[in-house]
Every structure is written in structure tokens, then in C-alpha cells.
Amino acid sequence: MMPFPGGIDANPNATLLFSIAAAAIYAFALELSPRIARSAAKTLAVGLLAALAVMQGGPPLLVAALALSAVGDAFLSREGEKAFLGGLASFLAAHVAYVALFLKAGGGGGLLTAELWRGAVAMAMAVFVVVMLALLWRRVGPVLRVPIAGYVAAILAMGISALTTGFFWVIAGAVLFMASDGLLAAERFLLAATSPHRAWMRYAVWVLYYAAQLAITLGFLLT
Image (tube, rainbow, N blue to C red):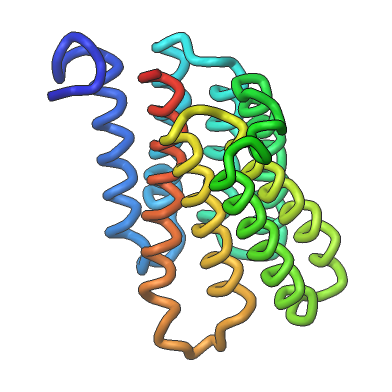
């Protein structure tokens, strides 16, 4: 059963399936050296979610966040510090768009105190982010410290703003996004270059990240 009307041949359902296929292709190509085909698969996975949001008349801020994320994926599919900083800037902008989207769709910050579980999750997010930033601060060079601190603040704001919404899948997506970014930071900056954990962490980062974007997208489009 497809999530959108019209069956598998309908444009929205076909676009969703192509997005999932691109995500799977990139997962299989993770261990290959950077190349155009691998970059295209990574970019298309979320880029097609942005196209799906346009087709379904989704909020413009959702389209913007997904499109900016796809640009970030394109940068991060390449190697080098410039590509990393380009990806960081793109995802920073995507998180700002998500914060605006979630706050617009949400019920305000009062929900965090009105419902105990929301406040508890927000506190856990804050602790997680502070611990990650403290660990990263000692391991990254001075050039990266300010951009990483800005990004960490943005993703915390994204997570907490998601908690002000009534959309379960959006909240789940925000939690998965933060988990993915935490693993990515650990894999890139905290693990030794020869660590055997790098291989599975790369796959986990991608699976968590794509699942996060998919959950947020469907959380808005199917509600």
C-alpha cells in the first residue's frame, strides 16, 4: 500500500520510491572512493524528498530545508575541509529553516512544560549537545571550532522546536537527526583513523540521517 493516492504509478509515490532507491544505492557505495555517481545518489536521495514536498504542496520551509540538506549532502559526498565547511554551512541553513517550520507548526514553548515527557526529552537533547561540543572542542582545530559551535546550537534548536509540534514522526525525525550528527562527529573527529568502528558508523550515520529526513517529510505531508 502506497502512502499517497494513485498507486505506484502516481508521481508522488514514484518519487518517494526513487528517493528510497537512491538512498539504498548510496549505502551500497559508501565504501567506494568519492565519484560523481556516488555524489549524485546521495544528493538525489533527499533532493527527491524536496521534489515530493513540492508535488504535495508541502510548506515552503520544508521544501527549503530539504533542498538545503541535499546541497549539504553534495558537499559532504566529497572530501576535504572546504567541502566539509560547505556541507556544514548548508546544513546550518537547513536547520534554521526547520526551526522556523517547527515553530510555525507547533503549539509554542509552553508544551515543553505542560507535558513532562517533552521537557525531559528537551533536557536530554541539551545534555547530549553539551557533552558532544565539549568533546569536539578539544579535538578540532581553531578554524572549525566556531562553525561547529554554531551548528551544534542550530541542531539543538531544531530538536527542541520539533518538540513543540504535535507530529510524532517529526519529533522522531529530529531525534534521529541528532543521533546521526552525533555519530558523524564521533566518527570524523573522535575515533582513531584505524578504528574498526568507522565502517559500521558510516552506515549508521546514513541510515539514521535518511530516516530522519523521511520521517520529517512524511510527518508533514501525511498529516
